[in-house]
Image 1: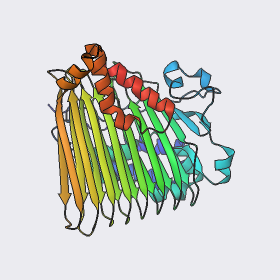
Image 2 (image 1 turned 90 degrees about the horizontal axis):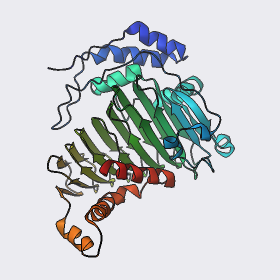
Image 3 (image 1 turned 135 degrees about the horizontal axis):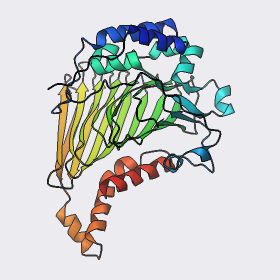
Image 4 (image 1 turned 180 degrees about the horizontal axis):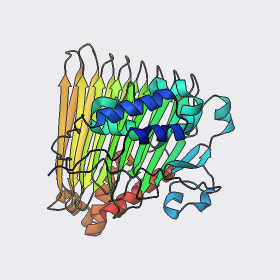
Length: 436
């Protein structure tokens, strides 16, 4: 039986929600059009994963405010571990449920015109700029039911804009804290680096609802204009009660680059998509992703590079560890369009299974419509190498510790790419917690 996904809210709810937040008319119109489309659009169809029984429209229409904090010391220990409390980040935003609890931006970046604020404030103060990019080039409202639902019900998120020729040295860090388990999170993140600018952006998602069921529908759009450089790191850790749709998209223009380092540590069912549109000539997009699955968790991961510009370059690296009865599908897709001459698409997907019931599937896909290109792929699904175990144990290392070392070595190519030490440490700790 298919889960009924008829929306439990109407046009009046959308209009009132938009008015309460002083949204511009274009945003209200976008929401209402998306609401009309949501019922008629199909659900996405991730390869080899039946999500029709997953309730992505579970939604509590009550907007959950998050109490503001004056000091990072007021945070629970799990969140403090993400931050250097003794030496707080200069550029930090914490979203608690659906509202801002803590926000800092250095005076230097303010003077340079950098915008770093929640999505609602951005729409009020920078409406034209947000409208220029919001669900335009990276993600479309009408792709499927989940993107339409997201557009209609968006209830949190962030806007970052870096002006032309501005180089941000200190990372921008964001924590999205789903404290109230009864409220769904329809979060939208929009990061724009204008021409010849650069930034490092790192975000964390965190919830603690082990039994209460809810949904996270997250869309992230990352835009790198000509000659812009973006390093994007993330660790997602939604609890078992959250069913997650995570869609991260990038667009690179001429000579631009986006480097992704993504840790997918959710405990609930997850559909994940990471797509980079390589529009400009000589642009690049490198995506590195790790995950650990456990219990009866079902996950579907699709990482894709779409080559449109000439001399574009992309490398996809996906490593996953599955234990107990967890299941994961890894799709790596390199699509080179006609005219994208001299482009390069490389991909590698590897899955390590720690139990007899665990399942992993790595699917390398190359779709090439141009002759003068290079491309390659590698994929493997297997168990811990007994020769590696024997080598380590022959030197006095216990079986458990030998397996631990192998797993950390297997996931290290992505973990070490995260640009903030505290976030790397958090991902390492999550790996330890989920594997042992």
